[in-house]
Length: 315
Image (cartoon, rainbow, N blue to C red; front, side, top):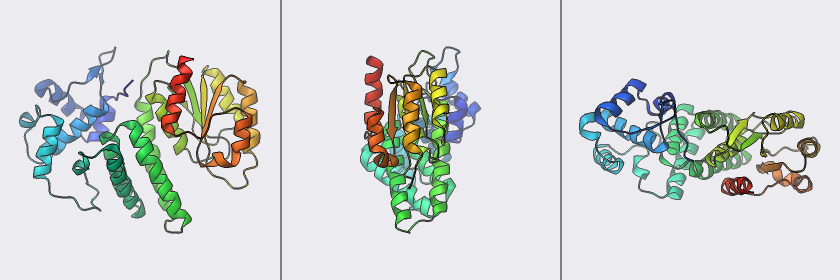
């Protein structure tokens, strides 16, 4: 099931006013968004990417009437001919030059650009780069090939003393806002399978939990996301209240985390033996024995997580 977005969300991601998006649709048929049961427009990632291309073309002086009927590939060629090369540290980089690359090569460029803006402590430029990546790439690729490697690189630079804590915090704030906006924009049926995503008590880094929540939503699951630092009792309460089929937890790496093993065992006891529990993140290594004891699933990437969720629905 493809994720869809409201016109308000699309306006925020493209820089176009809602009335202009509606005008381009009705007057020029520049895009053809789907309609929900209440007749509201539902935009896809492809629609967002096309609107961004159209805006770039119009900003370069091309009338919308002349470019509205062009395909996205034609728009890219038009812009590549008309736009000057963008310097690496330019926060207005559009990423168009990478449009012909496969996901892996494109992701590597986005990660490099995002890491550069992180080292510069430039949140607006970092947000711009990541928004481009989110529009240009499938969501699963964005999460697994851009977001995860970016924070692996940031963590490594921090451990080597080449990056300050404030740089990591800045990047976390920017990425959290982007992922949270994505998650809130997903609309699924009440009948969809349900999952709770969170981090256990003492674990404050929530990007892994947010990425898991988005991956689950991509597989058609209705996600209840409750953020970081939740005791087992609270997670179990949410699981029972919403009659979920699974719980997804993200663990950061903590030294001397004496509470984690007890919290995981308590969670299993409270939710029962049948509920699926998925655990990911850098902290899983130190809790491997406990994870096995409570029969939780770990050691899989986001693609593997989605496969497990899809299998769980079929069972």
